[in-house]
Image (cartoon, rainbow over all chains, first blue to last red; front, side, top):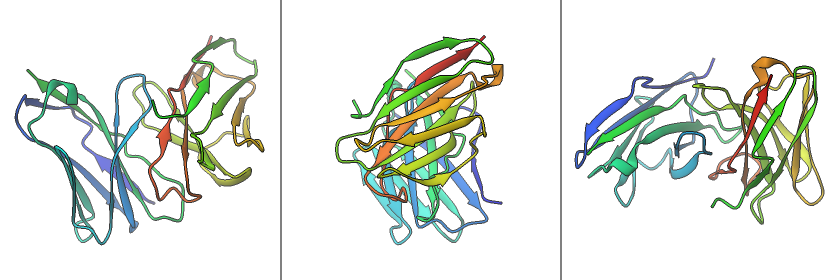
Length: 111
Length: 114
């Protein structure tokens, strides 16, 4: 069955460093991959969408890569700030079924 | 502000009862999705409607049902409530029928079953 894996352990980094979060998927071939941010008790907020023919996408301090051979996406936040502390969800998507989210990785940026 | 509204924000009810959660999508969005998020759990997809028709079904219990009305707002009905139904329920909307574009989430309804 389709499976999405995100590191369940929290990622703790110092302010100003680059945070790198990983999303691995198995048993399907997504045409798109989306990343969302979720703060406690609030709805997820869309960040970036990358298509299978795009290797990398950037938006301000965010960068996403999509490696269909490794079945992996990496999500980078450069010059991280305490305000970046949140849970980040990935959602690989085939374009044929409803979106399925990974369980998320909690990022904690220490001042 | 995502443009998606959900009411009520909080709901406390007893086991065995029935409740209705309401969602208004972003202007122009035809798809509405419902998700359940229990404490410390991931987002579980329940059901999707597109322009009034059921489009996709996820892990939705038979005690739960939903519909999308002609004005595109949607309601999620939860009946015979159990303690385990306590969770945050999110509604999201998007422009397309297959979720290829970003989804915009509402603030959620926190349901507590006592």
